[in-house]
Image (cartoon, rainbow, N blue to C red):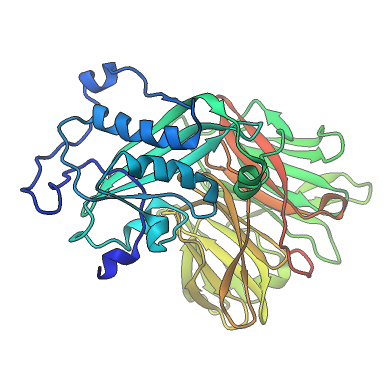
Length: 443
């Protein structure tokens, strides 16, 4: 098997799947949101009999859902960290003769696209990716399926409830990672940015309507600043908050990309913060502004990152500062979700470690953290080694949705990432401990 045999994929592709390996081409069978499709009963997977039976029923479900599809050779894949899914894969392959398991080929990928790009379309016809969903007790409550045919994008995606939720072994729960902790804060407004104020342990949040300082211990607002109304056409605007504190002064910067304006807030003698001055670009600390700046480009809706001579180095919608070999590094989040890295030592922009599209980034000591835009929704932390090699240091438990804002701090000396997840009409904030933070002062 050439390059294709190196890949391992998930299990299910449904668009234009050609016939079996030796048969004639199959007709296209692409699921769509037709009235007939919408009227079909909700998919469900009974869990009686355990994971092997869930796998067998999954194969039956796909055949019944798409009875006219000629599948060809199918690759079934999942995140290799979830080794406990192996019995499900065996059950599926036992009920699907033309199925190959990615794990049997040694193929690995944390997402469907990471496996998909490894596959040879002359050998495989379909990729089925399976992503497990866990309930608060750690039981298997659903399977998110992504079905792709080789040579095209995602053809079909669905989340299938597992009923009743299947209790997993202690080893399975350990492999999947710690469960998501209970919500740290629930607010009745969509949050757009967060920042950690290290001194008195305060969390800053920004919504479209106001900026708030929250006391970490009591979770109550210490100060608030109301913001002028946004135009009705604003949609889901983006904002940034950045701790600008230095030895001489405690400062916090805010910039609203929809309004095209920002401000710096300073801490007064009595501990009360006041609005100090307006800014026209990304809020960097004074020591950073000596060698880079990022004025806001209103026409493009991005920050133009420039060196001290005014030469543009990159553009972005958010910045995350973290420590790395040779000094400070800056993660740059593009509008399309890609992440690049600016080396502070020589002002060179290089590709970052993030293989997925990110919704938000932040820095913590020597870690760059990024939130995934698509399932599995999680936060991943990366470290740059002295040899210049990126290493994945940590990943969070699965989140119920893509994070809209991140920030990191050390409340009580414990490295923590604060994650804002959207809910209907508001946001839920989780405070998740981070493991793998290298020594060094948070930046």
